[in-house]
Length: 113
Length: 111
Image 1 (cartoon, rainbow over the protein chains, first blue to last red):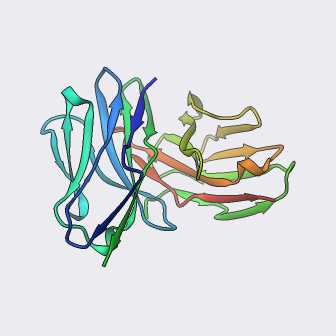
Image 2: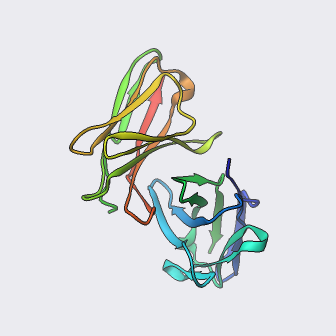
Image 3: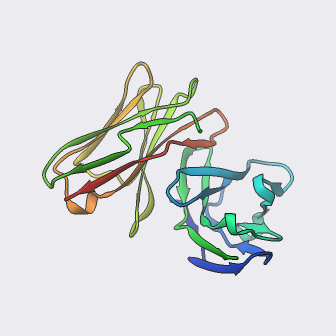
């Protein structure tokens, strides 16, 4: 069974700091990769996704992620965070044989003004 | 707005009771997924339906059941409720790419 690991459970940054959230998955086949964000009290929204092609994916709100197949990783990055980025971030994986997403445990990001 | 509608938004009930959560997917999406989000378990996949048929099962308890109707809306039935069933229940629908679009969730509190 596939699994997703998010190593950082709680990250606290100051505004303008750079962000990198780790995500590793375990599945040997072809995967689809996602990062979702959940703002306080809201539902999950897609930040970015990777299906194929350029392993560097750009998403909304200045976020990007890089798929490194050899490392089974899909880390999320943002060069300069804002207070409004305070939220919980979830990495998720699916594959063609199982469309249902498997989510990581989430990383709670707190950005201090 | 994702286009996925869930009702009710909030629900408070007692242990041993039964509740039904409802989900309407985005127009044109045939797949519906149910997820449970709790503090200790995180986001857990419960079950998926595709065009009325069960497609995949996750960590869904036997006390829970779901179905998808001909108009593609779905219902999640939770019975013999326990305190530990208190959680946020999300419904999502997907297009052909597999991207999931989530509803705003139904927050269930079991007292």
